[in-house]
Image (cartoon, rainbow, N blue to C red; front, side, top):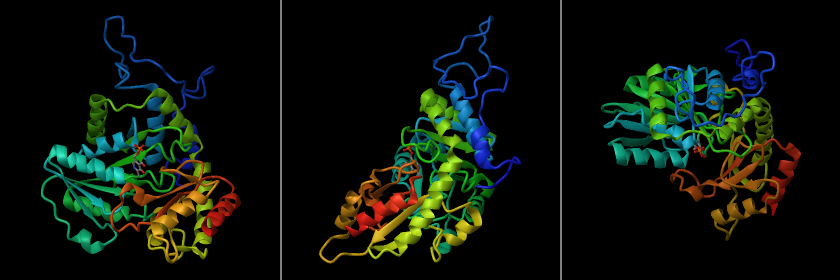
Length: 383
Ligand SMILES: Cc1ncc(COP(=O)(O)O)c(C=O)c1O
């Protein structure tokens, strides 16, 4: 979290960017603007950028300029959800094109990509981004879009973004990176060759499990104008209150992520040594296959862990995982991540690919005191 592209730490940029102009009497925080339209000039012409609130909105702009600065992008666009942001990014592949994805990823992304395939004559190919042979053998005909998660759901794999960027260039493909699990404070995909970054802002960016929102960012003017046109035409826009909440959340991203990542590192180590735990996935751990890539590309190791349990004779592993999850009191059983509260769930509830163990538990580490989280996890694992 120490990158200083503008001479300041990104955690400082998160605090300062997107403020109203600093003139006496100005509010320090962008006020929530509730309007559907803007008053025209005396001659009936529309003020630049202020035509109608489906096309532009001050609370989006404050949020977008903040994310653009954090991601090192020329522009960013807010959407009504991460899914809507992903839809705008997937729409960048032309009909007849191919979307290439890793075998592991957010289940909703696979659903959405399949929907594009059905509706727009797009082919979806899923390969193993961690297997150089499967990448080297990739051949596509026509337009293509390579889609990666910087840190994958739910296996917590660090993806080698520069290697994929080279692959994208070889294929003439656009390179889109979902940076939801990492945030720009951990990794900045555009600096590693991505064309577009996508976020579910419902997670770490907003950070308090109280809003659904999405964002895209890019430095390519053509891709920017296509995503803006997509948002304006389809209307998957973010409400002003929600934009304000995400922007407010980003203000504390540095301290939240610092604490969550510190907690996660300690918990990953303790979980690995717990007699009820079989495997732990967190790039901070010596021997974790993602550690070398994370050490090279990431700033810190993030707050996401996944784990499997030691088999108990006579109890199916899925039942055992569900029982452990239900036995926790502080750690919340819920599907999401990146909030201040620690939460966990068995991911195959959502139909993960076969390579994801049935009993895999995904743990989103929050900012509670690490000893309290550990006491709860230890008690649940020992129940
Ligand atoms: C990695 C990732 N990308 C995108 C999304 C979709 O975001 P949203 O739920 O905000 O629509 C999610 C949601 O869980 C996610 O985990």
